Length: 67
Image (tube, rainbow, N blue to C red; front, side, top):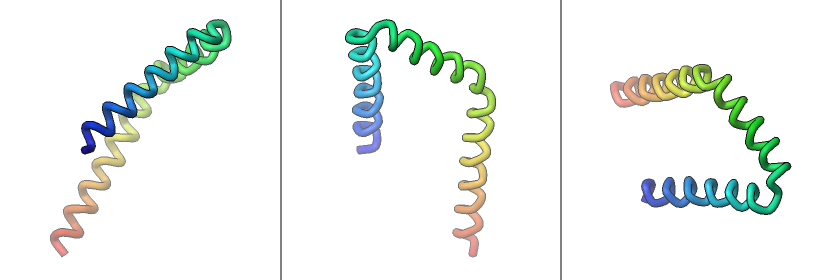
């Protein structure tokens, strides 16, 4: 179920961006370009933050199972 939900979410996101770019190309170029720039400039910080959150969650889950 999780895989199906992920595939549907990812596909719908791509379809929404394609439709946005089709019907409003100038506005989409500016908005999606800004999103791409932000993603490229913050990629390392997002990876570290997500890794830290997953690590803390796994430690907390392990402690809970030990107790």
